[in-house]
Amino acid sequence: MENLFRGKSGRSLFVLLCLAAYLIGISPHLIHWFTAGSPPDALVWNMTHYHVSYPEYGFLRRGLLGTAMAPLLAPLTDGGGAEYAVMLGLDLGLMLVLIWLAMRFFLREDGVPGQGWILAALILSPVGFVQLGYDAGRLDHVNFVLAAIAVLCALRGWSIAAGALMLVAVLVHEAALFYAVPVVTVLAWRIRFRLRDAWFAALPPLAAALALVIWGGTEADLSATLPEEVALAASVWTRDLLEPARGFPPVHYLIAAYFAAVPLFLLWTHYRLARTRPDLLFLAPFAALALFALGVDYGRWTQLVFFAVLLVIAAGPPLGRARGMDLDPLPARAVILPWLLPLGPIGIAVLYPFIPWVV
Picture (cartoon, helix red, strand yellow):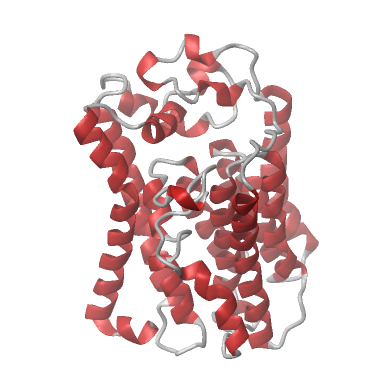
């Protein structure tokens, strides 16, 4: 597929297709908004996080972005269209950065095997840009950009900068501790085999995570103090760390397991192409699997696993590996073909929201 995107016109086509996938993902929310006259719950949920800030609520988890955005949102009507325009505008800007990063890493002229499959996954797969559109405004999207920049810093030996970015990411959303921090930490060590680089990258986000465990919770009901129009996610800050499974049908868990396993399989084919034995960097994305035990957003977790794997593959050349995968054997392609089916986004807690009869 990478041959389709050769040259300037090909790159423009790639950008358009990624944006089209993003638009397809967000379109049900926009249609609901225009027909019902009010934003859908999915957007209200994400907007709630933009209203939780340190000056108003103290040191709470997920409070950094709300603190940074507070001066911009303060003069706007709570839950009004202008606030959502800011949130969605920021999200679209983040998507453009991610598209540029995807082109930088995977739209190459060197013809590395398997790159076309990565591009296809970003455009077609339920965990690609269509999922990013469906979950527009999620704090994860900020952290995707921060993690990619942290990887670039780690590859240049700037471990302190990488650690600082990961500290910010954990304060934006603590899930980064599982899918981004392990990859960045191992990369910081692996690039020069210096343990202190790993510590520089790991200690700031670990300290932030510890601070969140000790001081980042609250027993107060934020729904009583948040504006009524944007209080849907108020329970996030008072609920238990572990969310029990909701009794989904078995097919739900099978699909989630498959979508989590395929990126790890692609990672193995990446190492196989380079004829390299699995190492600590190979194991780093596996840390994201812990999220499946911590919460029920199984669809979302599968995208985080995929993103962690993309970070490892993107970092390949400085470590002596091409940014590709060995998918020549027919069984390998058969494994990932169902994963690429354009069935809409993978969803959050309920999988395949565009085709509810699957679950």
